[in-house]
Length: 182
Image (spheres, rainbow, N blue to C red):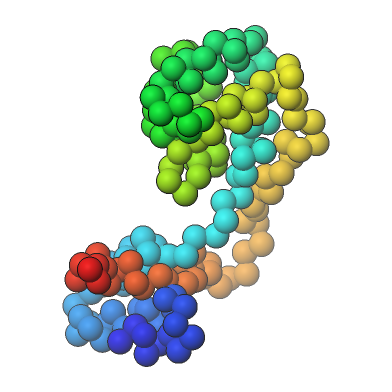
C-alpha cells in the first residue's frame, strides 16, 4: 500500500499520503494524534543544525572558562580504554571516560558533541575529539561560533503552523510491524 504512494521507490512518502494510508488501514480507528506520533517517529529528519564545529567551539569556550588543560591525560585515558588500539571508541565509552575525568562540560553538550563526532557505527575517533577540544593548540575562531540561526515565531499569519513532519520513511515502520525481510 505504501509502495503505491511511492512510484519512485524512495521508501519515503509525504505526511498527508502517510496519514491517508494509515486511516484506510485502520478503518479510522487511529486518532490524528496517534498518526502524528507515528509520523514523527518515522519522519525524515533534516540535517542537524548543530554541527560538530559549533559544538566544539562551545565546548572549547567552556573548557577555557574552567581552565581545563589536561588534554594529554584525557587522550591517554581514552587510549587506555581502547582495547583494540584502533583509535576508535564507542560513544558511550568516550562519555564515561570524559565523565570520570571530570571534563567540565554539561552532560547534554557532551552527548551532542559525541553524537556529532561519531561515525556510522557509533564510534568516535578520540584523538580527533581531544584535538578538537584542545583550545590551546587548536582554537576555533570566534566567528565560527555564530552558526546557529535563531528561530522567531513572531510572524503569525492566522494560519495553523506547518506540520513539523514532511516526509515519512515507511520501510522502517513496515519492518518494525512485520519484522525484517530476512
